[in-house]
Amino acid sequence: MEFQHFSVLLSECIEGLAIRPDGIYVDGTAGGGGHSSEIARRLTAGRLIALDKDPDAVAAATKRLEPFPAAEVVQTDFADMTAVLDRLSILQVDGILLDLGVSSYQLDSAERGFSYHQDAPLDMRMSKSGPSARDVVNSWSPEDLARVIREFGEEKYAWSIAKNIEKARRTAPVETTGQLADIVRSSMPFSARRDGNPAKKTFQAIRIAVNGELDSLSRVLDSAFERLAPGGRFCIITFHSLEDRMVKQKFADLCKGCVCPPEFPVCVCGRLPRARLISRKPIEPSEEELAVNRRSRSAKLRILEKL
Ligand SMILES: C[S@@+](CC[C@H](N)C(=O)[O-])C[C@H]1O[C@@H](n2cnc3c(N)ncnc32)[C@H](O)[C@@H]1O
Image (cartoon, rainbow, N blue to C red):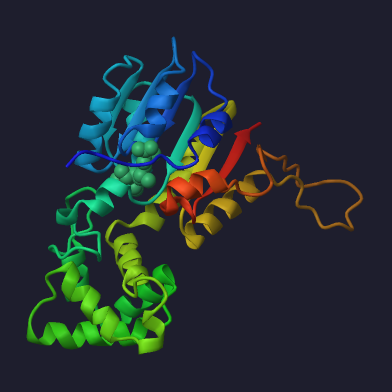
């Protein structure tokens, strides 16, 4: 299957990165290389390090970036970005992009087991290694499943879904996306099944758990910021409220100056802001973008500049 993915907020990211032709940039989520190729084509003496944990994405990005000698693609979790930069003897970079979540290619490749639209083995592993969705669904306690489905999926019927998964697997393991989607559907009252696909939130939650997505994000935020050169930009697109909250809080913290109590006549903490926000509010897709790519509707781009 050809790698097809509509790059979200593309021009906004390119503008947000304020690319210098001789700068060094990291795209932590190369995917099909959409954002990466737009960065790479703006570089002359600069470099682009494009990362992805998915071997299929690495192959697709490598092919797409072939015309750009400034670009190199590495298969890794972006949480390990500093180790990659160390290996390449890169001390500082001028911009970092993270376009979180899954690509359309991953969602649309039935055999990757991300989608509730097609019946396929339950997998959902971006890296194609480690425990799969099948392992999670068949071995986690109903309490842990319910917690993940409630927290990461914001699913009201989380407990009912977790109990029904546990009931089903007592007979035989839940093996396919179709089986899981049926269990989710049957765990909800009829009235709740009308709003989009009832399996959407549960599939999102299990995917986030299988890939440790929030953990990777929390690990990369500080370490990536430390590698930015003064004036360097950090652009992050999120698609989930928990991710967006993490980014928003971290960026706000980095922009905070003095934390002395207001009654202190002079500052004694000496804390200075380390960054500034490029736009106070997150940037969201335009009507034109939404018209051509409905999957971009929950995207939020936040941009930070290191001082
Ligand atoms: C939304 S897509 C990126 C699409 C890309 N910006 C483009 O324009 O083609 C997200 C990509 O990030 C990768 N990804 C998600 N979490 C990752 C992580 N922790 N480390 C490395 N890659 C990750 C996924 O495998 C997927 O290919």
